Amino acid sequence: MRELFAVLVATCGLSNPQQLWDKYKNDMTDDILHRLQEQNPNVTYSDLIYNEGLTKIEDQVKTISGKDLSDYGMIRPQRTEEISSDLIRELDYDTASLQQQLTESVPRLNPEQRLVFDNVVKKIEDGEGGLLFLDAPGGTGKTFLLNLLLTQIRKDKGIAVTVASSGIAATLLNGGRTAHSVLKLPLNLAHEEMPVCNISKNSERGRMLQQCKLLVWDECTMSHKRAIEALDRTLKDIKSNPNIMGGMVVLLAGDFRQTLPVITKGTPADEINACLKASTLWVQVKTFSLSTNMRVQLHNDVQSGQYAAALLKIGEDRMAKDGNGMITLDREFCNVVHNPDDLNNFVYSELLTNMRNREWLCERAILAPTNEMVGQINEQIMSRVEGDIVEFLSVDTVMDTEQVTSYPVEFLNSLELSGVPSHKLRLKVGVPVL
Ligand SMILES: Nc1ncnc2c1ncn2[C@@H]1O[C@H](COP(=O)(O)OP(=O)(O)OP(=O)(O)O)[C@@H](O)[C@H]1O
Image (tube, rainbow, N blue to C red; front, side, top):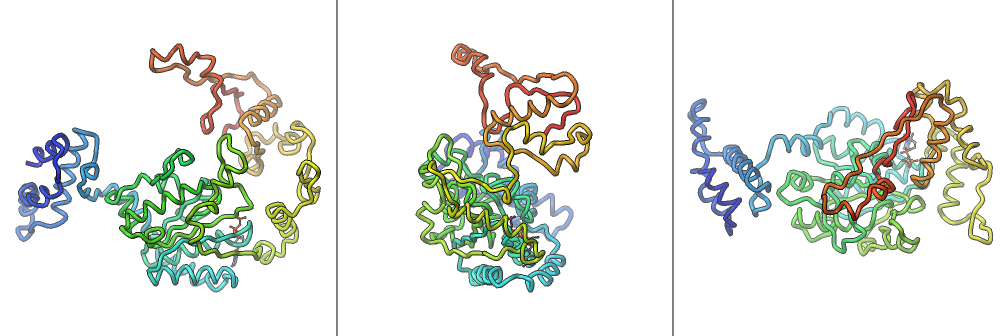
């Protein structure tokens, strides 16, 4: 009977399969009940039995059509492997050690941090919801504060989800992952007028977000405004609540003085327009600020203080400019080199003796704004290493034979795609590859 139902759902376009299931679910799961009654005669129909039946039906529907039950307007079964990947992940914290962490750290919060902490906790306790923004230049204790807020919710087995716009920022927050992977944001945000996250109400991710009390989004100033708008639309739908962010407390953190959203081939005006401050949601945002540099205050680190002050000066456009609108970085702020060779020799001065020293390599890096420049720097560094260069080429064949003439091999090889390694990798034996 389950098999018949699965075929009907997957192929016959039933107008209301959920109603049919609700009406006949006992008949469709009586074999499961009999099996359980063999071990315990007192067992009666329960959600657990219906869930098992529905899981088997969904497996068959998936085999036939590749879709799950929510695609046909039905409530999906709870699958143990999905629960473990979402709900269990968010609940898998040692509450005793979280409590200890709070007892030790909350009294150390400075007045600015304490104000944010108390406000956010109160909002969650009052079930108020809202969109908050924490403006925090580097070193002002943002990560410290955000981790404490997450701990406060998790110590009572509450769900606090934490995401960041970049992978590196995500690693600094407890349980952090990238916003794109957790919120299933569409990739083409710049081209979609009204994007939504790819999360349905009945999916495990959707159910986890329904229970979530606090969502922290770090480095949100780097994200396109439509990413936050997509989250707003999705949360309203998932939580069936028309209030901002579906009534959930969403705490955004970042610094508008740092990198803004990157718009491919865009002008500065496009970047400003893509910025969170240009969103219609911004008027509803409640902003908090942190300004005390904790690195300076705690460790009396004067150099850190000067560096932070110079960064603020640049970010707030308070540096003197020349006729072309360019600023000059002074030698107290950074070391200046005049060509790429000098840079290489400065950063990787004892390369040959340290090439296999992991710690030495981890202490330094050269960043460059374009892939082309990265290629040039790599070539220069490699020329200092002995040995023959070996070239590794990517696959460069068009799958669709009719398209072969439109995409000659030379053209395919010339592509330098963002996030994809170059077509031609040139390496030497022993060279570290990141
Ligand atoms: N209230 C506090 N009590 C004790 N230590 C603190 C406090 N606030 C911050 N710190 C410490 O100060 C240092 C800087 O804080 P944190 O890393 O949170 O700053 P941040 O704003 O995230 O900086 P960045 O953006 O540069 O990473 C850390 O070592 C952190 O542990």
